Length: 274
Ligand SMILES: O=C(O)CCC(=O)C(=O)O
Image 1 (spheres, rainbow, N blue to C red):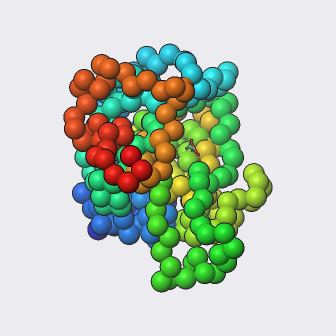
Image 2: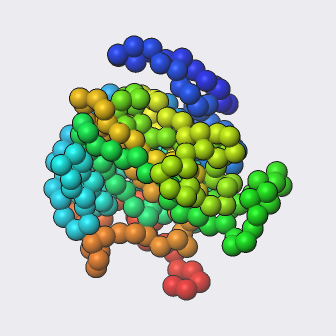
């Protein structure tokens, strides 16, 4: 069940979760939150040791393919193919349960990205990741209580740093997944009277959100580096975005992947189309 808003103590002071939070084992609550708010915030998924190990693994990543590099940030794609530590995020208990609650086993990951954002990094760019609403369907129709758009793509953000207002938190507009469109530019920061709001949380927390939610990264005005891991899940009929093309699965990763992990990587039973 949702804990509504909770007050927690962070190493650098006290802060409140601004959004409802859900226990890791409350899969039904997560699913309901995805319908109503477009996202579910799940505290305390990773232990401090796991956070440290994942940050160290990101520090070991080397750039190749479509990875991004700028003076203030690094972005590594398809990290599941580099280390088993990353692969295991594909079916992290409690989080993968939400993917299965949405799609059954008719799902897979379509990507897994790691980010390192140094002081000065500016990720402000309100957007949706992907919209699937039917063309010409009015916003009022999409927002009607008996209209439930199927969920096609979701992302799990594993925060590996405490997310203060200074350390470029993710911003979201609750409910905006029913807008039927995305923000029209950096300036459109409000929808139906709700403004983009920061998801302030702790290292080890997970934000699981639909691709249609209006969201953005933000500016790192702190002196720390922000670490983030993203796992992108989708209904199995959505193509995997594995790069660089032609994509080669790392044989060392395939050798250690469990049958469930192999399926999440794309090894599905035969079906229509293939
Ligand atoms: O950095 C963030 O919190 C947001 C990232 C994001 O919006 C994206 O990858 O689409």
